[in-house]
Every structure is written in structure tokens, then in C-alpha cells.
Image (cartoon, rainbow, N blue to C red; front, side, top):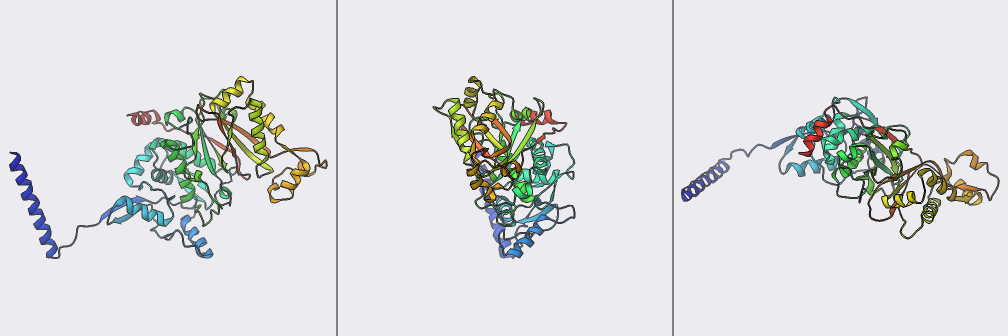
Length: 433
């Protein structure tokens, strides 16, 4: 029986091979090309103009040639692409040349995948969540979903993304300047509330590093939304001198269980069990190690680092404390309020030095008037003057490794409550299967 099956299969194989050869000799047409339907991730303004068309005008005016296929696409929601080789490779190459990718492979936003992403929201696909700078693309639910697919998100990440997009669109965040300045700033997402555990958003060891799909893909999707819907292209209108690896993914949750004080969102005025996303325009991360230091010595070190920052005034400064450090400070009687008070009183410069470093340079543009009116050269001035000092608890144990995060001086922290769809519990059940 086995021998007969083998012979039968071989006979069929030979027959098919001969038939193929005969068709080729007879000039029969090749097999038809595959047609793949993919959604367009680019933003469309209220006037119906794709942001890419505006970016192409900028490129032409200044002589830029990258991305090479900027604005070269049919102006439709869903495009039919003829595939001649491998669908994944061809879509990736095409989207990259159009300026829609970040340099890493993207997931092709097919109709099936985008519709699956819609399960994470009960909003209509054509609902405009907000308008995204710098070019004013409308962030519809559909456009957010398309970019979420490309970044590798799961459907249940949609509520976080929609809230984050609303946050960066607030005037206080100042996205149009954040996304076009020469600084190395980029959005850092901080997640609070039960949703952090529900979505397995890392708040512990390596919270700002690799290894967590939620952290990586949510952070990446937000940056893609800024790039594609908002129209912020590196080298075209995003003029960051060096850029930042945080533009690929910059998202973490607060370690509320390891926090000996009130969590960040409660400090910002939200009830304890509320799901909240807070976004800051992080300029970078400075490591501050507390090993072998007393609590006061550690806070002195933080203050010394602050004095070395480049701006005389900073609307927001974020200090991320590791759980071990936070526990030690708590045991020594420190509260968030006393920590902030001590650091800001310690981080000071004589007015004469402050004047040379900030007031006599372009780094003092946002300094309050009372500082400029100071007449005593020896008067001690906070350096920097901080509008909002935020303390976040995240990271392991083990290790007293902490971070100081300067925030771009033209931007404030913005928080938004995360709105959950009516099918949330059902969605989570399917996710756990």
C-alpha cells in the first residue's frame, strides 16, 4: 500500500511537471500576480489633503530626496498592491520608501489585521479622536488602528493608544514643536491603574528596556502615529540633531505595588483605581546610583545632577526611583513632598553664576521675571527652576539604580484617563486563552 501511494504521487508529480513545461513552451501566460489590500497609514487633514503631500512640498523646496517615494501613492483608504515576490518584504520596502516606517520591519496593515484591531474599541472607525501635529492629520480610530497594526500592537492596546494620542495633542504638550525641534526629545508614556497588569505592561526590572511586547509596541505605535498621521519626518521637518533611541519605543508602567507613597496618577488628581496615561517629552535619561549612599547623600547627588542641566527653567522634571531606593527613603522618613523640597533647596546657584549660565544665553528664555529682577549677586537661585517635579516609582529590585529625566523646556506633562470599551472583560478573556 505504501509503495503504491509513493508511485501514485510520483506519477502525479511527473504529470504536473510535464504539463507545466508544455504550457511554458506553448507561451501560456504566467500565474496571475497576487493582489494584497493594505490600509494607508498617512494622516489626512480636515481639508482632505494628505500630510505627505505637504511634506513633499517641503522636500522639494529644500532639496531633500529622502524618503524617495514621498507622496507617491493613490489617495485612498485601502490600496491594492500587486505582489510579485514576498508580500511581507514588498510591503515593508514600499512603506519604508514612502516614509511610513521607522527602519524596523512593520506588520503589513491588511484588512483582516486592521479589523481585528477594531475589537479593542467601540468607537466608530471614522471617529476623529483628535488632530495630530505638526501637519494636522486627523487621528481617526481607523488611522490609529492601522499604525497600531504596523507597530505590532494587540487589539487590547487600543484604549491606551487613543488616550495617549489625545494627551500629545493637548496644547500644553506642544507636539508641533516637540516633533520638529533640534532637541533629542520624544514622548515617554507612563501607565497607571489596573490596566497595566491587565496588559502586562512592564513596571519592574528592565521596564524601559527590551522584552515586553506591550511596552515596545505601544511606545512604537505612538511614534508612528506622530510620524505618519501627524507628519513629522526625520530630516524633513523633524530637525533633531541627534535624535533618540526612545523614538522607537518609550513606555512603562508605574510599579504601584512597590511604591511606598501615592502613585503618580493619584498625585495628579485621579482616583486610585483609575486607568491613566501620562506623557512627557523626555530629553534623555541620566542614571543616578544610590548604592553605598545615605538617603541624604543620594538626594544631594540628585540635586547636583540637576544643577548641571542645560535649562534655567524646566516646566517638568521627572525622577524615576527604583523600588529599593524608594523603600530606603521611606524607612528614613522621607515623603515625596519632603524629597522635592530638599532637592530644590539644594539645587541652587548664586545669581551671578546663574546669570552667566542662563540669563546671558538663549537657555534662559523661559526664566520667570522675578529672577531677572534679582539684584543680589550672591542670592541663591534654583537651578533649574522647576514648574512640576514628578516622582515615579518603577524598576526592579534588585539594585538602587535610578534615573533623572529632563523634559523638553517647551512642553508640560499631560495625563488622560484611559476609556475602556464595553467588551473589555470579554476581550481580556480572549487574550488569556
